[in-house]
Every structure is written in structure tokens, then in C-alpha cells.
Amino acid sequence: MSIARIYSPTKNATQSGLARTDEWVLEHSLSEPKRVDPLMGWYGSGDTNRQVRLRFDTLEEAEAYAKAEGISYEVEARRQRPAMRPKSYADNFRTDRLTNWTH
Image (cartoon, rainbow, N blue to C red; front, side, top):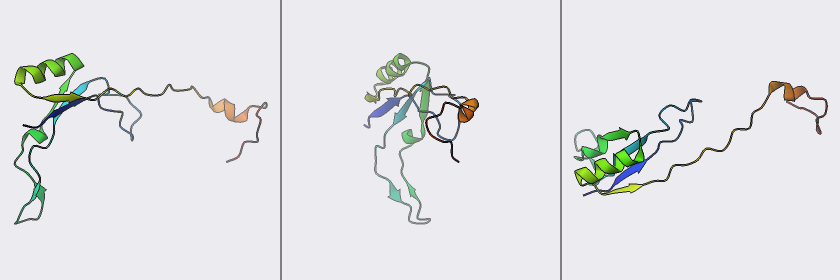
């Protein structure tokens, strides 16, 4: 049996919002190797658990589900975002700049 991975997803790099970054995801790892389909040449496998991604509000809920279903799992620690330093457009035109502003 494969080991499931429980993690908290990071912020999407192409978006500025933080939606769905406070939840936890349980995702199964690949239990059988992928193989090439002889007809089409596409890669695939018969492992349907890999297609399932379960979302939970808390880490405790995800762990409780995995224990109740008898799924072995690993927890990846949540990454902390660096603190945002507020910036102002007016700072570009400060008179007390140490260096000249260039494009």
C-alpha cells in the first residue's frame, strides 16, 4: 500500500490571493509504476487513488481520516510566508534617497 501525503498547499504563483492556503490536503502517492499505453502511447496506470485529492479544514481532521481509513501517511510541515514590507508609490519620489532613481 502506498503512503499518503498530508500538506498545506502554497499560494499560487500566478495569483495574488491567498484562497485555499489555510486548508490541508491528503493526496495518495503512486502505488504502481506508470506504463505506456500500446495503442496511443500515453502514460497511465491503473491506480485510481492517485486521482483523489481530499481537502480538510485542519491537520487534525486529515490525520483522523487517515487513521480511521487505515491509510499510512506523512505530514509535510506548513511553510511560513515571509512578512510583507509595505511599500508606497510615493517612495519613488523621496528627496532623501541615497541613490538616484533609475528605470
